[in-house]
Image 1 (spheres, each protein chain N blue to C red):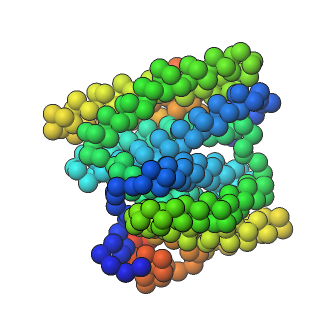
Image 2 (cartoon, each protein chain N blue to C red):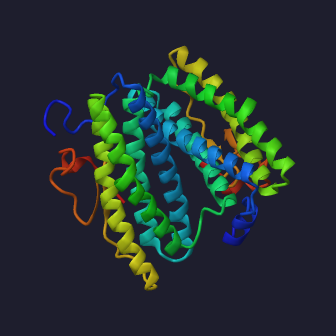
Length: 181
Length: 182
């Protein structure tokens, strides 16, 4: 392909309804492929295939580039204030609607591990919702967050701004295993 | 944390009822897309001069990745590496043979040029991925790891190459400096 769009990521455009629907499906597909490959990379490391692990991570990254391109075409990359608002909205839906419904079904069907996986996610989404709301206020006032580390539990995703708790309040993982950003 | 201890704490695979399985699949799709969105929004925050907001988006993206992994485990979606390579190969084949050609046709029919580009970029890279997964699977089935050669990814289109970086991306013509190497 030649022309002004060469070697730049695809840009937002007004899409036909069918195309929009398919690009949304493609975003879902690329996002899930990327996450699967990251999980497969950890598995390859455990089995003693570090270079296969690296291949999975590289391809996961490529799928992330595709996901970004699809998001761009869908016009889903706003300014940071808008993105924080959208993030807050997504977390709110998961907290108020999605995970409570899934947990109710998991309990009804006595699928304990499914319930645990949904509970871990639900608890962390509550952290995220609060943090996004506070951050949006800060950015609206024209300021960045301060440089306090953000720590994430590698088991359940519990997210804290500042020091990790001695034990994760959701799953009991000890502080030293939290990943700091 | 010892690796066994780590594994023990994670949600475990279990025999799922149909509704639970459907719900976990949907939750996996949701967490996966949230993780990708937050990474992209992190770049945007960096561009706008909010590095600490960017860091926050990356941290929360990582948390969503933990949730995606947990859901995938419960659905028994993480097998041996040989099986994972086969599953990955199957997914890439579906995208190459069915999904993206169909989407490309519709985008062309509707005259959506940027949609055509994002579909073409993905399709071209999936062809590379499919081949790499097939080769890696042969090696792993034979009991060995793949070689320690660099794997590089184009930041614009996702073109993936083992070995050296090209002067120019063969798919989108981005310069070699715009590759990330693993």
